Amino acid sequence: MKTLFLIPFYNHPEKIKALCEALARYDLPILIVDDGSNEVSKKALENLSEFGVEILTRAQNGGKGAALKDGFRHALQNGYTHAFQIDADFQHDISLVAEFLELSKRYPNDLIMADPIYGEDAPKSRFYGRKITNFWVKINTLNFDIKDAMCGFRIYPLKELESATLQSSSNRMEFDMEILVNAIRSGVEIKWIALKVSYEAGGVSHFKMLKDNALISLMHARYFFTLVPFLFGKVFKGQKYAWWQKGERSNEFFLRVSLFLTRNLPIFLIKPIVIIVVCFYYLFSKVERENIREFLLNVEKFSGKKPTTSVFSNFYDFGIAICDKFRIWQNGVLESELELSKFNSIKDEFEASKRGRIVLTSHLGNVEICKALSLRSPNFRMIILVYSKGSENFYKILEQISKGQIKLISVEKLDAAAMMQLKEAVEDGVNIGIMGDRTPLNGDKFIRLSFLGKEAKFNYGPYLLAGILGVKMSALWCIKKGDKFDIELSDIADEIKLSRDRKASVLPYVQSYVRQLEARACKTPSQWFNFFDFWR
Image (tube, rainbow, N blue to C red; front, top):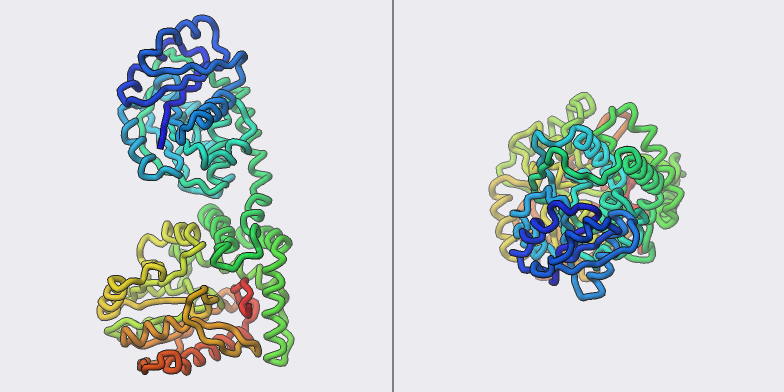
């Protein structure tokens, strides 16, 4: 890791020497990009070599963004991996440089950003202008963890940002925001450190209120109108890959859009917006359309009845289900939306159980209703085993809003120690939830069974887990009928006894789950949300 300080400089002669002197103690090279400054400012740059300063001179003023781009190129050409941008006005708390460098060392592929703390000296116009800019950056990235998009105190991982830099066409003040948008869109993670920012009375600022605000507004508008094409490009890029290689892009896409909708809009406004989003998703998702079409054809052949719903219905219901998912996780589902007799019966059964059980779920309906169970039953606790490979962002977002009430554990991390923890958990009454209809990964233990008249693979790992832990196994179903959630808990086995031939010993229980899934899929085919090639 090789880092330099990068200072874009334009007519800031007053404090440049003091800034370089303060930075020199960190024993890193300092690159100043002189963006066509006047003679007085050029004079101030003389005799800075004692602080390890190199001057890169631009013949004409091109703007802050142009200066930074030149600095990036120079740094890469000279073998640097990171550029620590610090604005020349010396407004930032330099004492935190070491903390920024340490965080960058720990996360070398991430963009390290300042979360500015402003005092009473901050101009109100700048303060509120930043709030507006931060709002639009959140919209254009669908990232709601943005602290500040404008602060010029940040460490850039240069290689990771090459694509984002090329996509950033702006050359003036708006570059700070544009490269952040493109960095997030290209998958670069952000780390934040709180930083004090001071404003001196009569301080020099080259921010032109009208011109730069106009350019920033145009930049926000341009990225807003590219938001949908960008997201669909991310969702459907690499369609030839298996699901664990391409990740749950469709889920992540709907997750981010739905998170924004459910946080900011009343329910009656959400549905028409979902229809618009679903239409785009439907038009650009050829592979997913074909997979759902095959599913509906198999339902028709197996049941002897043509489904009354269309392929589009599955897409639309999926969009609504994602919105419901967030309402559930944000405690927004009303008691009137639950089939209370069934719900209370299930709640009572869980509360009466001293030990936990394995709870199988599926891609049919909306199993996040178990969150509602946890809210209305203090004794209902659950660990959800998830297959996070390729879906890290999906589960990261989900964990952000779950607030730890239901714990998520990756099955890829199920070592001996984790198994002991699960054993202790079920003895303490904690339930373990896991998808029963997930398409197996390479290397998974699976059984080939007929599903809707065609052979499909079903993972029998959950059944082995139930046998090893010695716990009951049930299936939890949640189908939305109109405006109500219809919840059912069905038995799979009171106990699974494993013989020497483990595959044979769990076969009847896998068959029981598959038959239940089959029957329910035929009843409500539009709520089948497994968009992968289930029979591959």
